[in-house]
Length: 444
Image (cartoon, rainbow, N blue to C red; front, side, top):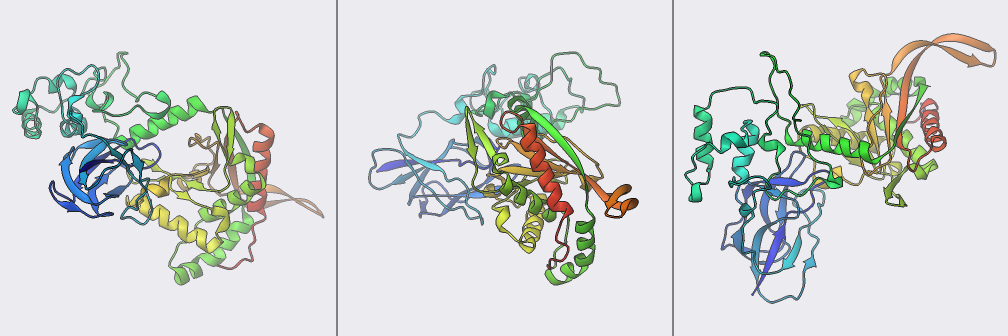
C-alpha cells in the first residue's frame, strides 16, 4: 500500500489560506477518482477539492472550521500499489472553472500534526479554530493566556473561548497591543515579496472615548499587503487625458432599453472601456507585460482585470480573458456576469487569476480622476472617471465654437521600470482615440 498526500491547491492571487467548511468524506471511506473530498472557503471564492486518485481516506489532518495554508497537506489517502516519486496531478474542480490542482506526494505520513507549531514568540498552543474566534472577537494573546484550558495539556478548546466571551466585559482593545490577527497564524507562509502584515505600531495613539477599534477582515489585510507590495515593487507613474465621450454616450442611450428588453442585460459603459483598452493593447503589446528580474514577459493573451467593489467595501478583480476576441455583446454579458457573481461570492479561483492589465471605474462613484495602484504582477492599470457634461471648445472646419459635451478624464498608471512616458502616453492616447471615435452605428 502507498499513501498519497492531498494538498490545498492555489486558490488565486493573494490567497494564502482557506477554511474547511465541510468534510464530504469520512475516515475509512473509499473514494473514487475525481470524488470531492472537502469543501473549502476563502474570502473570495468557495470550492470543492476532488481526489485525483482512488483509495481509502485514512486520515483527516484538519477539522471543519480549521484554516489551512495553501500547499499544506490536509488529508492522507491509502491506495494500492507503489510509486517512486511525487507526481503532480491536474484535476477538475466541481465548479465551472478549473483551479490549480492539488499535488500528490508519495511519502510517509507526517509524524507530527500541524498543531505542533504555533508560530514564533508564542509559547502556548492555540488551534486554528480558537485563533479564528479570537481574531473575530478582538481577543489578544495576553487575554488568551489567562483562559484556563480544558483540553489535553491545558489546551484552550472552542467551548473554553466561548465561555470566556460570555463572561468577558465589552471593552476597547488598546491600539498598542498586538492582536491575534497581527501575529502569524499556525504554519501560515510569508506574504509574497516578504511584505509583513500591516499591524499596529508601538507609538502611543490617542483613542477618545467615542472612538472604537475595528479589526481588518482577512480580505482587507490581503488587499493592504498587496497594495504595499505593489508600491514597493513598481515605479508608479500616472498620465491623464480628457476625452469627449459623445459618440459612446449617444450609442448607449439609443440602445440600452432595447438591449435590456432583448438580452435582459444592462448596457453599461464598462464593456465600452474594455473594448477600447483591448484594442489599444493590441496596438502597443509592450504594456501587456510582467517583470521577472532582468526579463520582460510579453503576454500573448489580453486578459483584462475588472475591479469590482463589494458590498462590504472590499475589492475583487475578476478577469476577462482574451478580451480582444469578444464582440460587444459578448463583453456586455461577460462583464455583467462577473460583476454579479463577484458581489454574491460565487466566483471560482480561475476567474480571479491570470490578468495582464486592469481597469478600475472610478466614475461609478462620481470620482473625476484617480491614480490607482498597479495590480502586481501587471505593469499597467487604466482608470476612468465620471462622465460630466461641460462647456468645451470644439474645433470645426468653420472655426472654433463653444458646446456642451459629455467629458471624461481617463488615466493610466504604469510601471516606469519597463514602460516609459512615451509608451505610456501613446497607449493612453490610443485608448482615448478609440473611445472618441466609437462606432455609434454598431448593432447590439
